[in-house]
Amino acid sequence: MAATASAGTLLLVLVIDPVMWCAVRFAGGFCFAGLFTVMEAWLNSGVENKDRARVLAIYRMVDIGFGDRSAVPDPDLRPRRLCHLRHHVDDDYAVAGAGVAWRPLQPGAAEDVKLDLARVWRISPLGCFGCICVGVTNSAFRTLSPVYAEQIGMSVADVVTFVSVGIFGGALIQYPLGYLSDRWDRRAVLLATTCGAMLARWRWPFVAGADPTLNLVIIFIFGCFAMPLYSLSAAHSNDRADKGEFVLINAA
Image 1 (cartoon, rainbow, N blue to C red):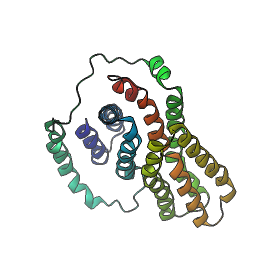
Image 2: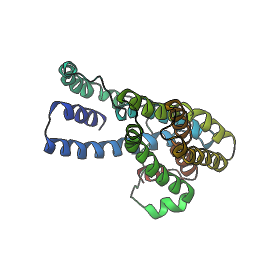
Image 3: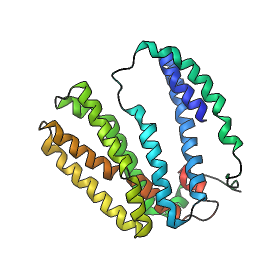
């Protein structure tokens, strides 16, 4: 799935065709959903509650720091780079077997897996609600923050910096919050983090059109508190899952 999703992303540049783009995006969405389910279920099945938030924090740091780099506009994408993309497609499939070959750390397969959203809600209503809210708010941030930056008069380079700063803040503070969550009541850390994101979002309209540096500071603070909410909510849900339910929790 990783190789297919990666190759599909590169095909979006190599093949300029709306039908192909729709097909690739559909296949990519399927692959990424499967990848996240497998990776997060694997991680959660291999750790204890006292370490869970820190492990998920490291996972999210890699996800945000590298995966979300694609969400940051690149004003320096030049046609001369396209000649290398075909080699990347081949290389992706060549290295895909490495993860499959590394078997000693693989957890056992769940005996019975079916999508039961009611069961997921019963396991952790707070975790479900937190993940839903994070999905709504963070997706809006990723898609609309460049529009906001452009409308307040930022240049293309400033827009790139604006989006990057928020993503960098989200990656930077993942582990400290995960550490606190493993040491204290996870719900208290969730509440404090949510309040921090809300306060930053409340302050945001008051600096629109003001000093660009002030906008960067606010978006950095917002990213620091908004993006870690997913790993904290997921840790809270997985804490309460029985053995064999990690695939169910992370698929939902």
